[in-house]
Length: 243
Image (cartoon, rainbow, N blue to C red; front, side, top):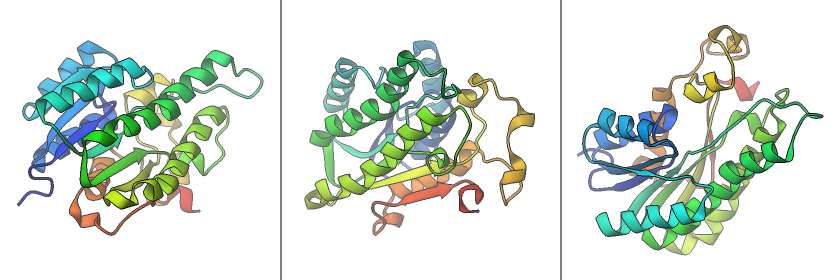
């Protein structure tokens, strides 16, 4: 029996990076997956890469009308959700002194507002005992120059998990946060980082992570293997945030 046999999952930001790899793992473990992304071409490519048991829905999580359309699509096609991986997020290096209102609004609208309303609007579809996984970051635990706004959003995400397990306890819905460390993805490269700039020396395991490393941990949190795991922040960072 596959770990997610018969489950229906949503992965926001599933068109690339951690989201895409996780969606592939979900399908391999027997789930039907809905993925979202803001760019239609990338979303179509991701659906083709996953290959089966997947539907792509173009949407921006910070746009509540887009979220309504997303969940209407899921309701019509499958009628339920068992897993939500609220993964969509953005980040940009902007030092204090140069932070603009636009930078603040964009980062909080996607990483905090978008994540909150993704989960809230999913609730009517969530089955009893469903699993919600929130993508946080080691950035909420460590000081990183010029990344304060992004880091603050991820601290908010971790806080959501603690509160929501109480809001959802009557439905036995688990909420956990996963905090990746340094994982080179298209988003990282869009920040302008090169391979040489990844701080391997700060990682006790001596390497950066892979999207597979994160996806396997998300599958654990999505599956019954973690049936007594609730409200945690699971660091998948090679030990970076622990020293």
